[in-house]
Image (cartoon, rainbow, N blue to C red; front, side, top):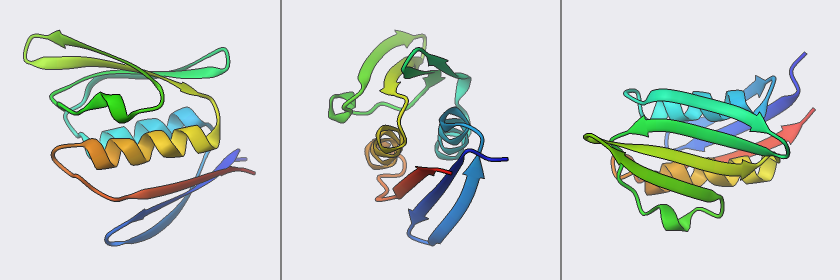
Length: 115
């Protein structure tokens, strides 16, 4: 049985989904926003979720409330976030990803709740 229900609103509609973990939600959304993302890992470490990937996204990462590290690796950026393992924090993180992506600059909204 799924542990979370999450809703994603974008310019085209509202989508209701279920997931077993917050990490699964993060992976699905990042892969949607950046189909060419490489080395994506989303791991639970204590009370936090660590998101790590290679991407050509070049954002102003300072808007994120989470801890962000960005390092150049060739033509790509190695991006690592540390997010509290809470539905509200993950939803905020995903909204920042949508808004800050120079490709999308979207106003997507997310709502995540435990079942």
